[in-house]
Image (cartoon, rainbow, N blue to C red):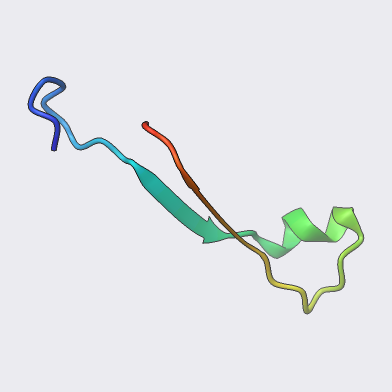
Length: 41
């Protein structure tokens, strides 16, 4: 929680790519991909 903004601030995030995002890249259907990063949002 950030007192100056009076709200929660996200610092790190992560997630899984949805299959429909990977198929146009030519990846097989059984491939799973994760993503992560640091940022201030």
